[in-house]
Image (cartoon, rainbow, N blue to C red; front, side, top):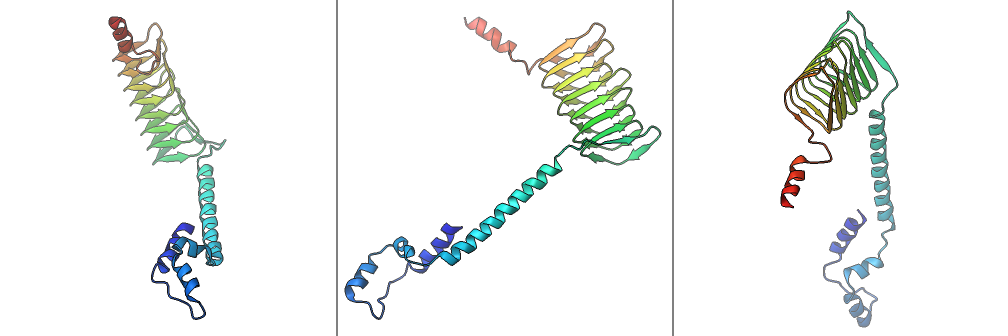
Length: 228
């Protein structure tokens, strides 16, 4: 801002310099040789500078306040809301804490905390962690951490998380950046992308398994062997 103000004053003095009434020829000639920057050094910019600094302080204060508000908005609250059994909620749910769903929700669920489901969800779900036990979920599940699909749970939709433990039934693709564990009672109809997969005896999979997030790339490994 100060540079802009200086530039504006430079433009105002960039014209023809005229001699002052009490100025002799030598002083006038010397002043004509000054650059606009040298002229600005002799000008009083104090009042304008204080104004610009005041505006800058206001802008910085505003930015800090916005950042503080943003952090407050993303703070996870240690609170748990409960949708009781027998209750049906139609509409989206958005919360900064945890939610336990024992009843039925027809809409999207988006939380900063944990989502525990033993009821029914008809819509996409997003939370820090998702635990389903005896649940019926129709919609995509996205978790920053772990997704656990317990026995007697049915999920019709894709699953994305950092890690996953599946003991129920999932009809959809599973995309996990870390490990996936399929328990003996797991039934998966869809492709699995993960860093590693543990398939316990009895688990059923209809789809492709790819450890695309593993540290070792099989294609590169065998290409290197052939090259040798």
